[in-house]
Image (cartoon, rainbow, N blue to C red):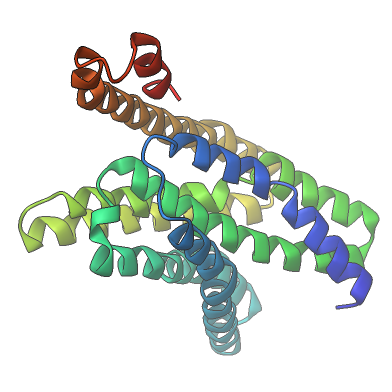
Length: 264
């Protein structure tokens, strides 16, 4: 990988980051998560999770290819190994928060925000690699790769991991280890399945299959998660209004202040 390819990959991969970072911070304004945790989750996705996935995926695909042939190896790497390994690697950061900073997972919105940061970091590093390799094959290949990854689906990894984040967030508020384990498993399974469906469609020979999955599964799922996040944000605003209501009655805050604080 040459210097030009690397710089090009870094620039193109960075384009969606401020957009989705801004969306996550906007959703999280009522009860902001610690900046340190947000940075660490992003770095985990961009660094450790990406490294784990690269090593495990490459090794597993090489073994399967040697045993069953390159065609089976490619299918395994795309539709089996990548979804399982990548979502599991990203989930480690959420597991750490769940185990040691569970008080920060006090709602579904928190799970979505942390998961989005992990996914955003992972997507950044993955896109650097894809764009750098694409440039080596020609500018047309780079343009097509950027359109597919940077325009059509920059939300893919944050979306996958958001399902895991929702699972951890629900588990954090549940009673009983069995129920908690079930919610975590369901969230991770949802992330893996969605990731596998997306990867399989993207690698299929039929462009219609890819567009069908994109239009009928990916975009609707993204919209549903956004709706869940905004509903959770509205509830947080309502809770702020209820907590600060007595301050208005006591004259500490004016009605306009309460309205402003509960509708950030």
